[in-house]
Image (cartoon, one colour):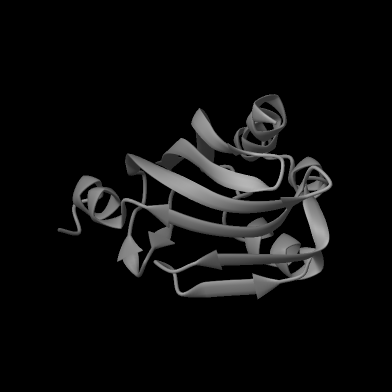
Length: 132
């Protein structure tokens, strides 16, 4: 399971949206309480992620997994390197960078992600971009 999850996170770093979506069930539910985001279904997830995570700014590094074949938690490190004219949580992040840690709590079905809830260090990100 750990190797599968490493490959899944690597799809973000490579910017490979199709490969990322292959790791999710058709009826996946994704939530990010910090963004106030909830998306249902793989098509909705594809649309949401294409305009944010898969725009060339995100790298996710696998740290560890605790769980088993039906779910668990993946700890990761998120590096975002923003280009010109970008905003993040309403703040101008043009040409800024941050590195924060987070965790994805996953439910797994048949080796694919059926539910994902992400928690990450928003305060650390805001401090690094100069918003706090």
